[in-house]
Image 1 (cartoon, rainbow, N blue to C red):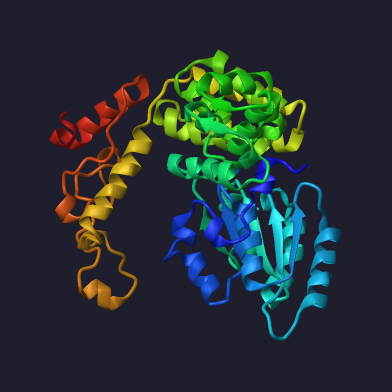
Image 2: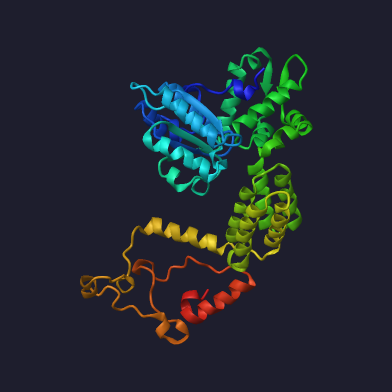
Length: 423
């Protein structure tokens, strides 16, 4: 018997739950489907939000041949064979066959290169699914030929709708007398992943004897804890675990950081996934309190790719402990966030005349850059002049954090800028 999650996989948009921004009444993908045309595209989102299902629905709706490959166990030869089959399936009265590649971020550069010609020539419509940022994992040549669509984790009400549909429509579940009295534990274990939700739900029901089933939080906790391996296998919890990992680093707890790192290592998590998160943490959570943290995290990323498992775990452990023990500052994160908000509120303010570039004689006649003071011509390579647009003069975006390094930075800023940093 197929698992519940597979039995409940929607075949049409009318049964699809979530992603209203894409497939709702005015969703961009729905509009493309109604026009009987979709571009090659990348579906980017966490596990269990419907990427594979959506690809199959698009093929069904457009009545196109559909092939599916997994980047985990497919190579260049498999890709070329799929493209050749697509050539043989092309007909004048329909669009190109759809080639769906799950976890496309796991494809090497050469594997991705093998797709370029077929995508560019229209031999196939490529649909790639990834849990990783395509900007980092998909080569630029292929990414430029694809539209990227971002899928969001399912909201609480959407997850509940998935359960209700399973109760009402599944051929097995609807034959049983099942009452869900409490949802909290099921939703917590799902982590926004519909597949995990249905797996947990099915597991709870299977553990109950024949007769009426009343599902509450305690019953779910017992069933899931007894079968916890089902939810850890293959790194399905990696979003929850990496969240705990980063929060442990942020909280300066090296013991917890190493524990969550070990959970990811034991689950076979991709070393690049772990190291990218440490690079982000080194900048977002440690930042200017210890600028060397970003250098070490970046070197860790490079080193583990050269070494691989099992030794890579030692390098990552060293980096995680260093980050956890480092002083913390999120001033750089808050600064760019505040500056972006300033841009949104103030719009495109003009660049002050003295800061403008003057590559032509006309611009020079208009005094572009004329009043600019070259800092290196002055004592200690500093001169007090305005660098922000006039409407933002005196605005603070960067607020030094409370740590020894940035305390010294604040002293320098006050010495240079006087009252501008007198707070």
